[in-house]
Length: 110
Image (cartoon, rainbow, N blue to C red):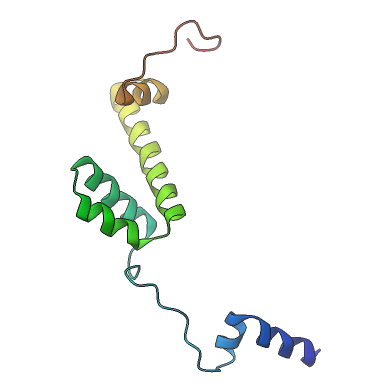
């Protein structure tokens, strides 16, 4: 059993670090201290204000996948909040914000 553990330590970078071989995890420049929701908030606000420097900065705080998730979550929360305030459905609000016409005559929509 000890041989298996030793093999895993040699193969897995995380196990090598935990065993104290001195290898430090690679640094991720610019990503310290920011979470995906903070990055999404700054990114979306910067897009709304057409501030390319802030857009570029916020995009470095998290991975592209995390930023996409955060922006999607922000969009969902914003649409739900506006829908409640306007006493409308989220779809009506989303279409209105994007300038998309209401669906007419679609079964189940009414």
